[in-house]
View (cartoon, rainbow, N blue to C red):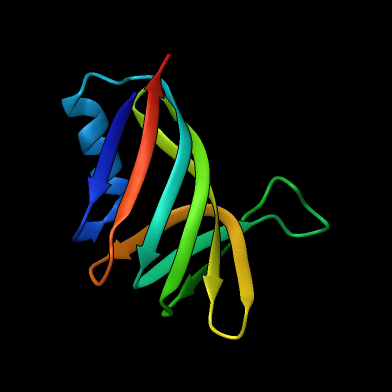
Length: 109
C-alpha cells in the first residue's frame, strides 16, 4: 500500500502524478481523507444517467472518499462536509488543497 499525500495544489493532478511516480497504473484508492479549500463534483440528473451536472464549490470542506486508478486515470467519489452540517457528494473532478492536506491510501492491483 502507498500513501499519497498532498499538502498544496490540485488533488486529482497530484494523485495521478504520484501514481505514475510509484508505477501504479491500476489500483484501488481504499481511503481518501483531508480538507480542501474548494472543489468541483458532478452528479447525474434524475432524467438522464448518461449526463453529468458539474458544480464548482468555492467552499472549504472536510473530505472523505474512495475510488480507483484505471490505466493511470484517477477516478474518485467523495463526500464533502461543508458549513451548516451539510454534505455535498459525487464524482470528484477537482479539489484545491492549501490550508490543510489530503491523503490517499492506494493499493496497486
